Every structure is written in C-alpha cells, then in structure tokens.
Image (tube, rainbow, N blue to C red):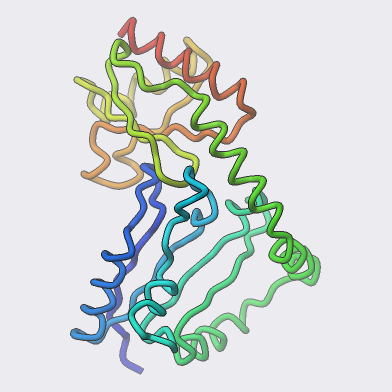
Length: 233
C-alpha cells in the first residue's frame, strides 16, 4: 500500500505554548481536501491552558465546524502524560477518520498494552477533575513565575498553553548555551535550562526551554536564580 502524504501539527506547541487558532485549522482542512493529504495533530497539551474562558481549539472541533462529520483525513493524538501528570504511564488515545483508525488499529494490535496500564488509563480518562486540577496548577505555576525581566537580558511571552517558557536570550547564542552557559547555570545557581536549538532546529536558535513542572515555590526560586545569573553574564 502506497504511503499517504501528511502534515503534522502541534497545538499547544512545545516549548512556546503557542495555540493554533480555529481559522488556521480550517484552512489546513481545506488544503487537505484540495491536495489529498492527512493531518495528524499532536494535542497532548490541549487541556493545559491559561484562559479558562478560551480553551485551545482542536482539529476535530475544526472538522465539525467545517462540516467534516466523519473527520475526513484527520487524526489526533492525546496523552495522559501531560493531562494527568503521569509521564511514566505512556498512554493516551488516538481519534479521527474511521478509515485511518481501521489501519491504525491493525498496527497498534501488534504492540498491545499491559492490563494495569489499560485499567489506569480508563480511570484517568474518566476523571476529568484531575485534568482540570492539573491545568489550574500549571496556570498557577506560570503566572506566579516572574521571569519576564528586561534587566535580565532576555524576553519571554506569556504562553497560551502547555507548561513551558521559551525565552529569547539577547546576545547569547544557542551553541554557547549548549557548550558552556547551561553547565555554568547548573553549577552556579543549581538550575538547568535546555537549548532551543536541540529541540526545534533553526527556529529555536537563541532560545531556551524552561519547564514549570516543580512546585510553585521552586519554579519561582529557579527563575530568580537564572535571572540573577544572566544579569551577571
């Protein structure tokens, strides 16, 4: 069977937390219909967002808005790792076009999953309150971490989703961060940042990723230490 061309989308994105608007997704659907390709959307951060009044739109939502009742040419991937804070479980769900799902099920059957993993996944998927709680906690961590400090030599935009910050470091190169500054930050202020260049190629040049996954007080303290370190640099 010949391979099917496809486009991969990620919303909210990693590490900037950018969210694709509904209009963007509907335009992608129009192009998929026109040029006959599949859209695969990674939506593992979709339940972690800042504004409770405006949750990120999903690809299947865009399908319904465009009249694609069978989610033609679309498949979405969700993960319990982020939604319910269980990164070791390696479980989630896939949904979309029934024809694509038939082929995916044949592939997935060969892998299987332990009974305990399936049981825990069902419990977590039914517990929407847990997803809500983790989203609120993530929002609190982001909003309480004062990293946007012009005097520190870097700038950061408040993310719309996910639990990362991707600040642009003024005058500092990602190669330098990878070979020198990251190690010095680890030694001098007992914190760590990850060079954006190793995550996203050229679009990540000059950026780093800060993950807000520790308790709130630790996130704030780490941000202050990194800020003070960059000021001295």
